[in-house]
Image 1: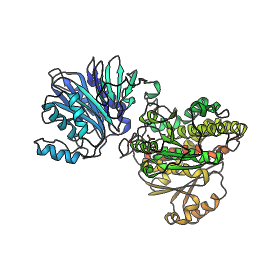
Image 2: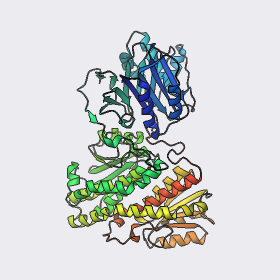
Image 3: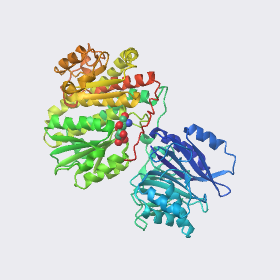
Length: 603
Ligand code: M6R
């Protein structure tokens, strides 16, 4: 989704901007652009509706006045206005003096555009963001500097924004945030703004986060204004290794690399967390509160991971639990004694942040389960547990799902021990079950790579897919269906298998693919028979003898029943591999599915 980078550097700005935009690519975008101050004091605006490589070539081929060390850049994911060069950021005012990049949505843009046009301003694009540059133009004309102009115009805006403006007259660069993240990074090369630490994490050592309403001038000694005055210096965070993106390392795409990484991710998390389960120390170190019920919040894959964890709390601790879709959580009543776990790999999802606003009105304790310990979500939660999946570049979540489930289950077990709801010796047995997961995931990978390529030919022309599960298998079936639809652009629906005869069975005809997460629930046999009787093509992901014998029970392991509590996590691997293989056979871009973004920062 939209991304911002800006800099004031000792050396030319353009290479930093292009590199930062490349690092933001994974978020998904439709157009891209930079504005850089030239040695002659003008603004060079270079934009493209193609990829970063195209922009990089245009920057390299720049033949105007030399580009200097001050600039702003943006990746745009279209919300208002089509994907055109004119709609790409940065946007200029009528005079070309001020350039602006913006993430978020200006809700009163139509009214402002009307007023500004009536006042003689000419708009070059259809996007809401352009009103910002014209509003700044009006304020600058009155003699204000960019900092003061920014303070004046934010009072006129409604909606959400992280934005950075650059004044070519004096080289000032000013950023501000309201409901959308913006960071200030410090490095030996200079100072930076970025909407996501991954854009600058390769060279920035420390960064600070703007609070809503903060206005910051990008300078060697940044000028920070909060509520009209200079605040205490905001906390400095380290841009650690986990924020830096790895390469493909021989893999054909990031999704392939990230699927393969899952056994290693699982082992890393369990090394860190599993010892804290039987003692309850993992929970106590998080300063977790007492609680009587659980609510989890998430979107998409993170919601599926959250639901697995909520159910584990219920099964293991007898606690009432519910899963809230973040975009609808605003109508939820959070009862006293509720522990709210918020799951988000990015920690920047706008729907999540609005849900957090709502939850906080109830004074509920909030634990963030996120892959980004520097995120807005992490900063706003009472406590944070990091998933340690490492950067995930593929838009389709794979290793972060596995990481969220394992992290969440470890926290659940430890919390239940600390609250006296789970016996320590039983917790030790369950922790041992968890420790088998890396092997089980590795085995599922081997089986999937062996079996799935031969299934693809028969399935590639199917127009729709059903996914079925029972008990703890249902949520994994839901995750399998989500993965398949986002990667292949084919319809895929997941149901508790018992629901089949209440409607979806009508969809089944000769050859309809029905993927069954077969966790040995005896009731599944009848459901499979119902599908087969109608000619459906059943693909069972289960123990030995299944179509894809990828579930852990097929390997000879001394399991203590944990998998029946949190479900067959390893079933997700064949479903990820199947979705990727089918998508490739259909000619899809598996790392960047159409219409989707990695970090969804608009609600
Ligand atoms: O960053 P988040 O975990 O909050 O993102 C939530 C969803 O947008 C995300 O899980 C999405 O569903 C995945 N790309 C699906 O693979």
